[in-house]
Length: 304
Image (cartoon, rainbow, N blue to C red; front, side, top):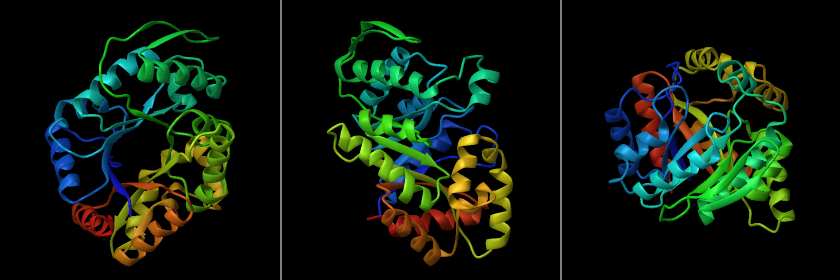
């Protein structure tokens, strides 16, 4: 199985590691245990791209960020940063971007969240031009870029966090694929994969990646772990996009989507996601310290 580690701490408000030393240790561990990659969240903690550039240059493992919100960074600024980080990581960076949610965009940052797909389309047009050609001259309805970047090195892959049909179509037509978070097997199989694949095919592009992000807990204390996951993820359920995913799955809480059980159960559930069309799993080990350790080891045993 193709499994990467998503180093997100669900128990912390910032949802990210507390120090660069902690991140460095996890990157090295992910490489030593043979994982396909190491990813950081872009939440309210340390800047993920900066952290990877600071400590990931000496480690030979693909790395990614899931996901950078687009409203509080101009695409030129993000392209400049991503190209610099990708250069530091020897071309092993995957950049995940997302529209975030209305509550953050409007209440926290003070921007207009209307027509997020249209905004993302303009954003991606500028971002991809700058990453691939180092120049963009475009005046859209909400974004403008007239200039160049003087940075050598390869472009990084770009993926979009897409939960709605129009955003998935945009991702399939223009980027390397999509990154999901808390999407269940039915949603991946019946909605995400066919929607993004059809869009890519219509645009004459190869099949995009579908990276499925999920909390994973290998444990024998299943009831306690499910209660804890439900409590930790309760805020996820407030966003309309996550509510729609829960409805598609026929579930009542985000915690029910987590993969929780013993080694055999977790292996079976992950295999079901690959059967549903996932390209890879972005696994977030969670639980008590003992459960997290057990989860890392169980996941490492599944990596191929």
